[in-house]
Length: 274
Image 1 (cartoon, rainbow, N blue to C red):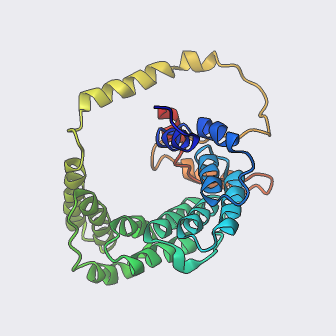
Image 2 (image 1 turned 90 degrees about the vertical axis):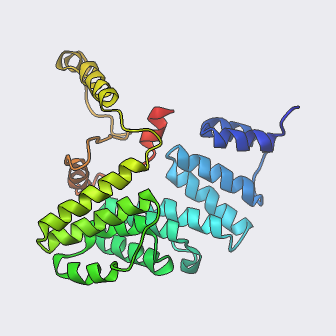
C-alpha cells in the first residue's frame, strides 16, 4: 500500500531523516497557513541545526495557529539555545521545556536565568528530579542547609530519578563539609544509575572502544592532516570530555565581540551516530 506524502514525512521524521523529510514536504507547495506543516518544517530545520530557519517557520506556524502550546514551547526552547528566551506566553511553558531552557542558559553561562528557569520547573512539578540535578552547581554553599531541608521529604521512585536526586544531595552535603555523607550519596546515585541500564556496563567493550579512538587519532595521523587558514564562514567545534575545559574555552572565545559562542550543543552526538 502506497504511503501518502504526510505519512512519508512522519516516518522520515521518526527515523531522524530530517533532510529527506524537508524534501518531501517541499512537494506540498506553499505552506503558508498550514500550521502542522510549518511546525514540521521548523522542527526539521532545528534538528539540522538551522535555528534561524526553524524559528522563522515556527513563528509562521504560531500565526496560523495562535495559542498552540506545542508551538509556543518549541519557539521558547529553540530561541533559548542561542540567546534569551523568546517568550510568547510564559504560562504555556511546560516543566520539561522550562528545565531545558534552564539547562541551555547554564550552557551559555547565564546562571541567573538558568536558576530562575529551573526553580520555575520545580514550582510547576515538585518531583522533576532532572531539574534538581541541573540546579546542583547553581546552589551557593550558604544555601546548602536550606536545600537539604527542602528536599528531605522527596522520595524518587525510578532509578533515573534516584540518580539525579542523589547527585544533588551529595553536592549539598559536600558543601556542608559532610564529605563521608557526600561520598555515600554519590555511591548510591551511581548504583541507581547503573541499575537503570538495559544491559550491564561492559568495561572491556568500553576499553576497546577508547583504544580504537586513540589508535585512529594517533600523533602520526594527525600530523598528516592538511592545515590551512580558518574559513570564517564555517562553524568551529570545540569538543572534549566533561570537566575538560571545553565549556570554558567556548566562553573565552565568545568573549570576542566578533565571535559568537553557541554554547553546548546536544544534537551533534546523535548526528554522528546516525
